[in-house]
Amino acid sequence: MDRRDFVKTAAAGAAAGAVPSLAASSAAAEAGVTGESGRMSAPAIHTRATRPVLVADVSSIRYRNGGPESAIERAFRGITEGEDILDACVAGVNIPELDPEERGIGYGGLPNADGVVQLDSCLMHGPRRWAGGVAGLEGVKTPSLVAKAVAELTDHHLVVGKGAQDFARALGFEIHDDLNTAASRELWLEWRRRVDPGHWLDPEERLRDTGRVGEDTDPDTIRRERGPAPAAHPDPARAARLRRFHDASLAAGLSMVDDGLIDPDSFWGTTSLEAVSPDGDLCGVTTTSGLSWKIPGRAGDSPILGAGQYVDNDVGAAGSTGRGEANLYNLSCFMIVEFMRQGMSPKDAGMAVLERVRHNTVESRLLNSRGLPAFDLRFFVLGKVGDYAGVAMYGAAESAFAVCDENGAREEPLEGLLEGSPRD
Ligand code: GLY
Figure 1 (cartoon, rainbow, N blue to C red):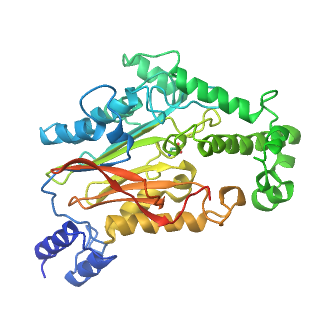
Figure 2 (cartoon, helix red, strand yellow):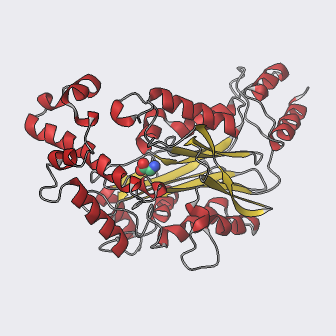
Figure 3 (cartoon, protein in one colour):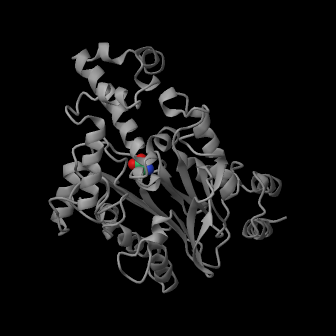
């Protein structure tokens, strides 16, 4: 089999969803495919897609900001009309970013512990092989456009905090005093009430009363799993109080999810959109207000290449929503693309990384009563030939991801690694 035949075979198999794990790399080895260095290397799938395909989280299909199109529909239209693939995707995600009803990103995204909306975004342009990102950006409704400006106009990749806002201001972006809506501010106030109505910096007693503090803040558990950190800090009492507060903050936020006040998709809410063009070019864009009630300045996975987003124009693209720290620890999206480079299908690659995350989740505060991750994580994975998958740590019946191709925009069920719910 020569290289061209191998490529055709791999493409046909992938398009039919029939590429078993590592089958393509085995075939490449048989075919003697070598990398530029001349050494045997895992193959990229060099076949071109013949149709545009987009995959995304559900906010990309459920929000229109009062307009005619969702993010995924806008992006699909742009790509089919010949717009630059990344420009089309960014124009798409601008729709939910600007939608005040969408609580996980942009305007109206849930704020940090101080009640300030801080936004993260990153994007990668496959054919141009560049990327840009912003983190902790305040006052700009469309952080994805600022991330694009970082990539297009500078030699940097990631600009954060006040510097990111100054950069946006210098480029003429409108800077708003507050990106909260009445609804996002009310939810933040409710979180503060739950953390502690009287003294929100010392919430342990209040949460113990409500049964929200258990093993997480037990001193022995902390020593065993996280080390006796407070003693090593300049002010041990303050350090201990901060750690208690942080654990209690997360518990209070999750209690709001349990009580149905926050959609689980919004708590770590993120919009991530991956696309392949008819020419087989790939891109991805991710935008988020990050973990609700986060410590001011906390950056999640979304602005970090390889964690919440990765694109390799020779191979595929992956984006994610869910607990960002899990993706940061495991560089999940980079690993998914690397697994696809080795020949795994999008689904197998996503599942392999979910299994790695599950294996690496050991602290009791991160585990549910079944000893499984107490959080969800979702991956939207796209191969170069338009093969795709949506996978999740938990595949609840109603959980879905968005797809758009020549058959239109639709929701498809996510395939879960684990059954049940993260909160079981
Ligand atoms: N995945 C979004 C975040 O954790 O910030």
